[in-house]
Length: 371
Image (cartoon, rainbow, N blue to C red; front, side, top):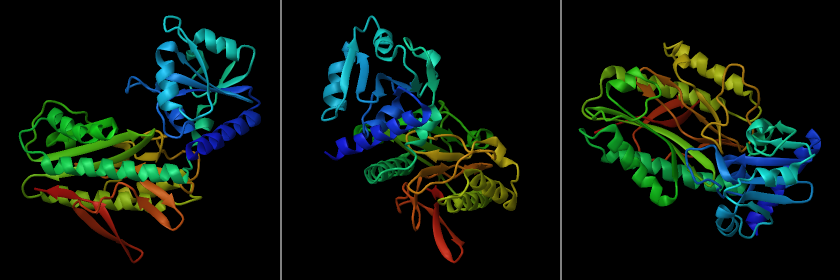
């Protein structure tokens, strides 16, 4: 019954938004939207697409699940069981355009995708940002699920770091990490692996067939229940070069400054500005320009990328993932904004840590595991 109560609360939020925007209904097509409204269920077949195979249409008195007969039985029985949705299915050869036209014709419909991309819909209005904002503040159930996901993701990436060996290709390392999360029902939304000189050359490297010599970066965006946990870890074989060791401590200072600034009521652009200031303090004033710095997370790896001009404020029970980077090093964890401080959900206590002091308090930030 808890799931039904959560779903009903979210449907009510959508209906309040409908009233504010003077809409007759809201059509949800994105995977993130489906997972949020259904309290953690999924509507996708292809993991690399933003949209799913089952849409949700919220009207003033009914919530429809629009899909094809090919998908309807499984979605109804495995994703919507116990929930109050009315199925509206068409033949797979016809697509869902005619169903959408029948249910939405002559009505003003808000969407979470560009309306022009929805077959059968006329007069649609893109309200994707406002819909996403409904999910930023997490419920107790969502926070508890997020904690479990984040810890599982962090343990997987750190176990991979302890098991890899020189001579493995970046592809093989990626496969090892994937093998640790897939059996847990976790979708590897993003796995980045870079080794040796590629870490210094590229801030956003995808895996290749290059073999590991001494130094490796592991990046994971792990999805389950629609939520996404984000983390980065580094491993070095042999003595750690002085430059990498120094820069690891510097990027941890930037990381800590941004995470400590992420408090309820603070403008997101001010958190970003605090990061820019700390980049300058550690001697890398321009490096923030070479990689996005992260931002709010939750039902996307990043709900949006923070910039110096970002709108919005940090909210209580909102999740963030900042990822500052300077030459040869990066720092990234997923945090939850709580009343008495921020919780680092991807902190395991089982890694190599850099200890930093701020305002008389000690903080542990991920360092480089030397093997």
